[in-house]
Length: 282
Ligand code: SAM
Image 1 (cartoon, rainbow, N blue to C red):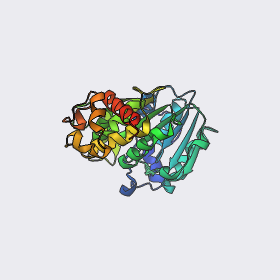
Image 2 (cartoon, helix red, strand yellow):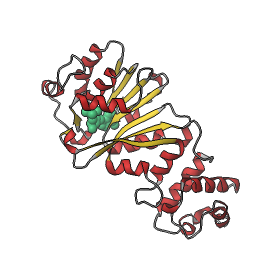
Image 3 (cartoon, rainbow, N blue to C red):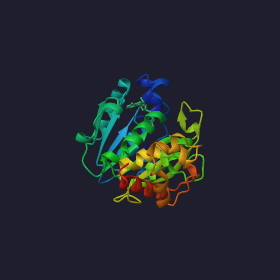
Image 4 (tube, rainbow, N blue to C red):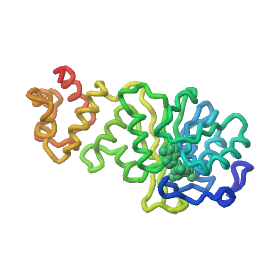
């Protein structure tokens, strides 16, 4: 393995700083710097961008991002034990790494970053899903980011890129694909991590779209999609009943049969339905 910088190997960093992995923080570390550099490259050309890294841990991916030429990296880590190893990386890359010891779910990062901004993270999957949902929130558009490159357990990654008609298709697919172009760009076996998790992981790269794939009001689309998939086994005429007496007319104008189920409805049809619902003032 060739070192990408002059810092000590990550196993040594972990031993020196007593960074035993904590399950409660979802700590499964990537210790192979060739692999972290590869993930950093999947985030696109970093040279002109600020990068937000959430959950840097001992800093393997952070080192990859800096070695791949990120203009600046803001690393937000909840575990205070990681501050010492991260400050060693900051010293090796003067002026390019800012580290904040905080819960990423509670921090407003925008004040610390300048566009264009790429987000890269290997996070516990529940935190990753929560952040992705917030970052895709149509109520806060345009977002602060240009691209997101995120590690998920494979099942969650498949839900992000899912097509209609599949079990994985749902709210996450629709929100991700409406305003962004998501792609799975890497698959990782459990052994890539220390300690290994139970399941396979995938890296998903999402680039933000300048215009949504189909026109719709984001808040209405979000409401209709949530209602439809909350009862995904029911026919839409039952699942969407709370929309009231004009529901069937709205479904018809969107080209959707009232007997269809949410998972059969395309993104284009959901957007047409959201437009019809908005036009009815429902
Ligand atoms: N990025 C490192 C790597 O690839 O080796 C660590 C990955 S580990 C799966 C997840 C990291 O996220 C841990 O360092 C953990 O402490 C951190 N973390 C967990 N919850 C967090 C939160 N809410 N905010 C910030 N960091 C968090």
